[in-house]
Length: 161
Image (cartoon, rainbow, N blue to C red):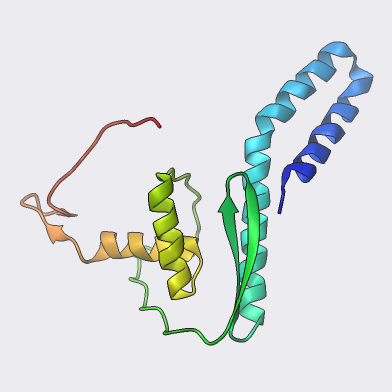
């Protein structure tokens, strides 16, 4: 699904709303619409993901997933009995039901591997990542000499691709 027509409609509407304000206001609206594109694209993807999850809960033995391909989203419908129920997720210490959003940048090869692993388990990439992170944080790691859970080595720094 190409999201560009929706984003272009939003851009045109914003610029049309600013037209009566004159050239400076129109120019500011054009700059603002360019800046808002990434946030609007993320909001559209989130809405598609929520819709796919809701549709999946209403269907028996069928799942709907949103898969990202470059800057477009593909809706994938998978029919059939689930292979095996996923293992229970580790409980969070202070699970209040609140959800926070983060941006995660992955190398393309790792992203593909995560998508394949999630698909093989019949769950969304988001659910797979939440479970993997929960397992890493709440179990499965070794305890270092400082008493903190970890994998024995710590790597910090900044990387740019």
